[in-house]
Image (cartoon, rainbow, N blue to C red; front, side, top):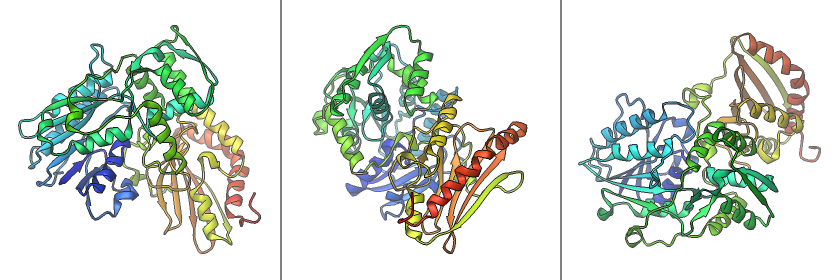
Length: 477
């Protein structure tokens, strides 16, 4: 079948695309930025790409002969106050384009919405579902609760909490019940639902076999990791304080923390249906889903992560518009060193950040991360998605990868930390010489004050970093 996928670089869509290709389908993938096409599918003969922003369609159109389309666009971590209107507009524009094709089925991944008291995001998801309904195609909606898998927001947040805190004083919403589902089961529902006419114009809750409180999820996660953890819940933590608690303890952004707390106050219990009669699947328990996730992590086979999403609010435009470094009105720190082992230096560059650190004065990098977190930034806790592999759009501590081209021997990063300006960090090898360039474009007087305040630290932080990258393996420290 010819299938269209939206949200191609997102956590679910990226994995779904690989599964659909394995099943022999032909894909049309929608992307906002052609520079963020996932490497796994970029050169696949069964994939074509459409550059599109569903908030501003211009003259974009879908291929007329698509048969099935997936709507996988969400704004859980959006900082916009009018995200409901934005989601509604995206859905309306998508529907308009799909109705101009021969598409027979649209599949939408939503959230379980059976509670009478819905969070703003779940209410928005339900409204999107109503908007997507059409007389020209059949709408199949799969409503999932907490999705458990390597790289998922819920998995990474629970991991942060469990592995860092032996004793936890937590908000009362940890007693809220939900039905977590493994990402592998979500992908089976989504992929196996293709073309099944009996699923047209129907909505199904998809969930794991257990009803668990968030507290039970934390404790079972700890069991899997062979950790002893103690949890005390307090009723005095307000939603705002709870959001700050999540923000400072985990790698989540404050916008996502606020959205999660808003959603976690509502019980997410699925309603039984006949969906498993149409799709042959036996959803796996929570602890097994956690075990499978860690197997992927150990194999360095994490395909996608919630951190890959461009949600910080730093990027108003596409990544590609930041690739050319500015020259005028900028402060620069430019250094170069001769190298004797290009392969080793490239390996170090592509492994920088995350658990590997920044090769020099890592304590200062951590302090800078704490300061950024204190002022509402992303901090260093995002780490990196892969141990030694980078592609455009990847998070890298408080940076975002703009360009990662081993043929050009160039890595370019853009700062997502809180700054009174814009900052870039570039590594480039030209003729056995490594060039390291930090560029800062200040915003106003405070931007200039900031640069001169941190300038003394650059003298040894950036110097130490390039020295470590240029050293041969037998002398590297």
